[in-house]
Amino acid sequence: MVGGDFPGVSNQKNFPPPVLAWSVWGLGALLYLIGFYQRVAPAVITDRLMTEFAIGGAALGNLSAFYFYSYVAMQIPTGMIADRWGPRRLLTAGAGVAALGTVLFAFAPDIYWAGIGRLLIGASVAVAFVSMLKLASHWFAPRHYALASGMALLMGVVGGVVAGVPLRFVVEAFGWRPVMAFSAALTAILCIATWLRVRDDPAERGYASHFQGAHHAEAPTPVLRGLMEVLSYRNVWILTAVPIGFTGAVLTFAGLWGVPFLRQVHGLDPKMAAAITSLLLVSWALGGPLLGSWSERMGRRKPLYLIAAGVALLGWAAIIFMPLPLWALVLLLIPTGFASGNIIIGFAWAKESVPLRLVGTASGVCNMGPLMGGMFLQPAVGWMLDQRWNGTIEAGARLYDATAYQAGFALMFGAVVVACIILCFAHESHCQQMNE
Image 1 (cartoon, rainbow, N blue to C red):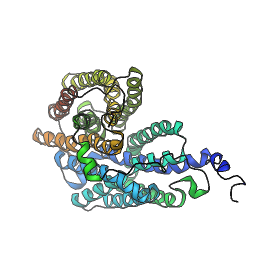
Image 2 (cartoon, rainbow, N blue to C red):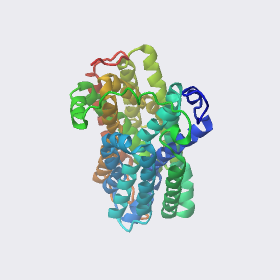
Image 3 (cartoon, rainbow, N blue to C red):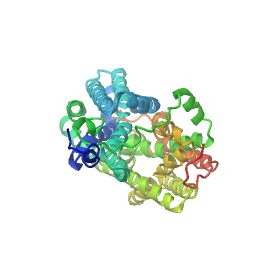
């Protein structure tokens, strides 16, 4: 008998070794890292893109937002596809399409093809997070699931940091097109490695699985009916809309317009500007899990979410409307980013606001909110910058003054204000799952 003479006994103990489990999960995490890298990469090459494609702020914001258009659209179907295909096939396909999209972006002859490339990148990397969670539920013991989720966020931040100072260094040395072509090659290698290395379940490698739900799952709720039922809960609408303001402001500043603002208004070089926006991303990433953990200890979601919302609101108000010296602006970005991580409270709160059988659908819906913030605000800020542009051009790229940036960033502030108001109408869950 394979595995020993006592059926079931050896299989219960023969779990995959940690090195194997983390390597399988890690390949999925690398696609998530690449996705975050691609999400914020335009921030450090805004001047190159505006010059290359002869575009203004609105067109640049829209080009960057093409990533978010397809990413948001993929949130709900990704879970269903993952259940049908399994994470191995989904991650392989995602990495392959991401490589193709990056190639199109790298060699785009005009803004049209660059937009198609960004669209493909956003749609393909959108599969990474759900696939990572599915792999974690099979390859890791339940007690390590939270660790894997936290490591996923860390991988994303690493991708965002790589798209800051390091990316600017290599772009200045080699040009943005060769760097993006090299990124496509690395993503293609990941595609091949994922197909060769990743397996949906340890059983495919001869090990016991950690997955606990396969044999007693309830009949699934039909997709459309489940979606309609999830949308019947007011908290879902509120907790999807609120991150549009908080995360939208972070992704708009750190992911596109913060670097040119710091360069053109404060006179910083591109690398220093990228380092400062990376600081905002790191603070945001640290705030998420800590605020989520603190709300668990409190046994309530709403008070801490509102407190953090107020801190973020005051932070952005000072950054946008006060004539701060650079050092004060940099210091304010840290608590503002940290407080904006309050959306992690919202993810847990949304899951608790629906019956257990609808948690997956509710998570997919609520995960659309943070990306919708970037989708709406990046082009909106670019449009406002163009409206206030005084006609100055340097090396083919438009230059905007402090007044123009203040008007553009005022849209971010307005979104944060609306988010704070909407949040007041959410019902407290007391960290308890809603009953059927």
